Image (cartoon, rainbow, N blue to C red; front, side, top):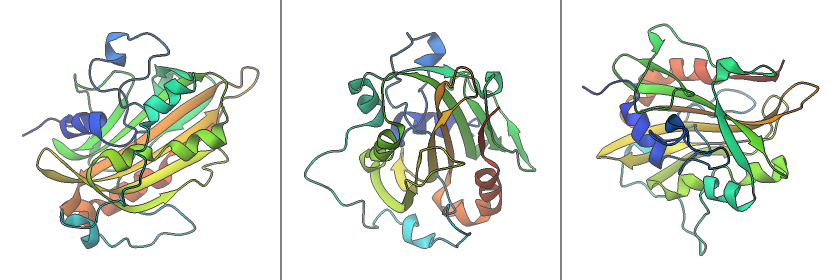
Length: 244
């Protein structure tokens, strides 16, 4: 049986906007070098919007489902987009932030877990010894950029995953901050995974008004999306990003 976060660690390398895969930020990579797939960490179940609705889980469980439509131009991976814009980032543990609150609740039966494949600045909670997992990462950002424009590119990586089937997406603000969200399912290592990803460009309190990239990713087995729904919904609804 895999350890909590093992599949998520693999997901970190391939799923939309996940934090640094093992070895990048964990081993002290230079500030300003975004991890290879570090741009958004989120993805799982319930649509985020005016009110809860029941997504059509069956429509995303099959690998034969219609994938995201291809376009004439391949999407630019978000980490590459950041580098191209001259935006640099440094991972910060969520509980070490002095000017911003970034947190998720821990549902009953879930617990924080340590995994050597996951950078120590990443907060991971898991249910049991396998999926589902929730991962929270924060990057301190530096550079001249328009946050509202930047988040428009936050979901680009989803189209690059294997057989991605989108269930929902949004570029609406989150707690007053520019944000992007995407959810759906994709194939990884012979498994069908269901994921919810939200990226938030948040601003810390005065006097610094430091900007941060806050990422939440919740991942479960696609065929367990319905049984895991209550816990996942609690994590999504309890996700908090606010200046201190």
